[in-house]
Length: 460
Image (tube, rainbow, N blue to C red; front, side, top):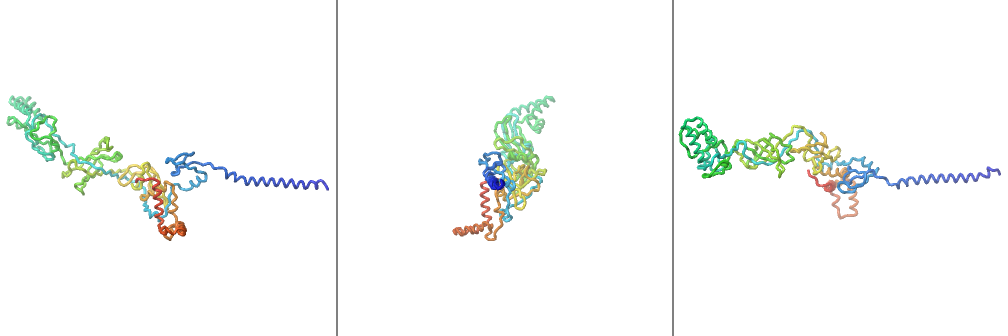
């Protein structure tokens, strides 16, 4: 036996040991690696609010609604990014049942219409107050009550005044002395005391002093604020009466502070009165007062209306419609299309093929039937103007509306999956046979209404 023959078994044993150790080490490595990887927890990418996926933070905390933030891991983030957040899909039959109505975003002038109330007043430009310039007594009152019509030059009252008697005597004395300077001075004093020119001319002719002096109406109109009666003692500063013209009247109206930017001078105004239904008066804004009422926070407006038939009377209550059409083209949408919550405004945009998404917008002016949109929409977009509250509620919660997109079963008008489930349940519970005949739209509407209530009450 040679030496190579002697060591051959030893070589075979060592080779077997080495091969076994290597195979065991390789197998342990292959088995241990996945286990170690699976046991290692993944780190969240970020945290989001449960009700608002757009609210993201890099650490745990509370959402604006006071709820705990939810961690989002890499695989979840990938699936979230792949889907359209806030996208709502509705099948055509459900869209028709919900009464979804679409309209387009337009750019055109905004028609503003402000409705308010007002009170008819005298035209203050033509309102005359009658005051005496001397002391005396009312001997005779030619007008008896407020509201009496008067004409230009009509007698109003007769006044006895010692001062007027003395002024007439001085005038006659100047005429007797034939002193033109004294005559002019005495005549000017009588005019300053409001003695009519006709009375001065009669005094020059007759040379007789009159104990009472008659005063006449300075304009045509109606008597208002009659404060005296026959026998009253009056003096300068006493308001005897007022005469107001009614051929043109003023109307005092008020608008809210938020509407102040919509009114302009000379804007057309339409007025109606309850006591004359069916009639309209066309006028305009004459003046906008510079200050607001500190109590009601309203802005006062002065309107002018012609009154040739004298149908408009002071202190009448009137309904006012202010028309303020802006010639500038603006981006507008129907008023019913905007969802106003008090904090934000949104509209539901139709993307086509039964897809909808709620979008935040910033409002501008509010017109009669439309609202100006400053941000959030572009011209030509299609938006929802009816049933948008249901869509907005689901879109803001990022709800899955695939239940509305499932094929309709020919049996009982239910989706196939739900019909099968109900038939399966009917084998176990025979006490509710009516459940199979309920339309799918009722079930969907119930779920959507519940989602809408949880989202919060919305104000159009």
